[in-house]
Amino acid sequence: MMIREPAVAGKFYADEPEKCVAGIKSCLQRAADTPAEADTADMERFVGGVVPHAGWLYSGSVAARVFHEIAQRPHPQAIVIFGAVHVLHGPCPTVFPAGAWETPMGLANIDERLSERLHGQTGLLEKDPHAHDDEHSIEVEIPFIQYLMPETLVVPIMVPVNDKAAALGRAVGRTCRSYGVSSVFICSTDLTHYGPSFGFTPQGVGPEGLKWAKDTNDRRMIDLMLAMQSQDAVKEAVTNRNACGGGAIAATLAACESYGARRATLLEHTNSFEIGRTFTDEPPRDSVGYVGILFD
Image 1 (cartoon, helix red, strand yellow):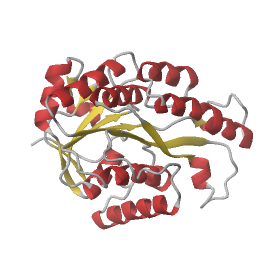
Image 2 (cartoon, helix red, strand yellow; image 1 turned 90 degrees about the vertical axis):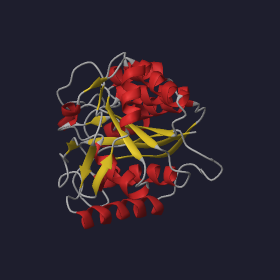
Image 3 (tube, helix red, strand yellow; image 1 turned 30 degrees about the vertical axis):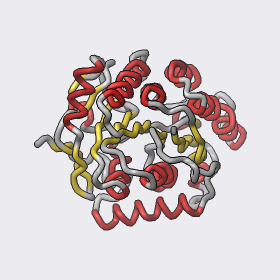
Image 4 (cartoon, one colour; image 1 turned 90 degrees about the horizontal axis):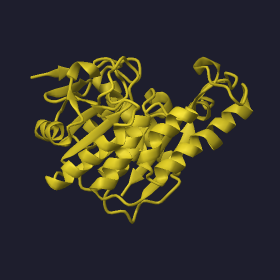
């Protein structure tokens, strides 16, 4: 069986089983201690969501909030995770086709039948397990699924930022719907990377620049996602540098809409500066935006 070994355990999250579970519980508790921006009690099921993918200390509570909400409803057969690409990668989206992903919590099994169907039916996917070897955007989400929905299978897909992304998402959503696969589509992306460390300071260095990054630049992409404008996501990400996973966003929005989603709900929007200042006194220079969104 093909096994994808963890690449960032011990860096982005704990590399021991007990510490990994403790980390998830801490993320869930931090999410519970922070009121959500919207009430989801009347929502019967979710088709998809958007989660960040930084280290759990910073973005884990936002991701945990989204996964917890999904897990409160009937668990899907499969979660298709559209991930951002931070490593050397070709222009074609790549699926991890079979086997399992290993984390400190054990093996997360791939939905091999669905993976094969998506590869055959969409005509837009390459089977390339090794493309996923060093990419963290999907890996950091897997333990949340293992803990909250242990029986759910996964289909990891890396999506480059190009004009194929929305078409892929539409094809994936349509295929899952036509075959009657109970699915949830997850986008793994962070938002604006602002500050000298990222070479992006159009509004200067310091509090005013960080405020602009969150309230204006992040918000442009968030509003696009809430309007489910899949066709505009890649251009928005490239033009305004407000998401590292523009392709993943486009694919997720298109998949959710194709599968039947008609509404997007914002749960939380924060950034690494706001979270970091709860445990560090470092002066404000750099920040990365995080958002949690659900689609139903």
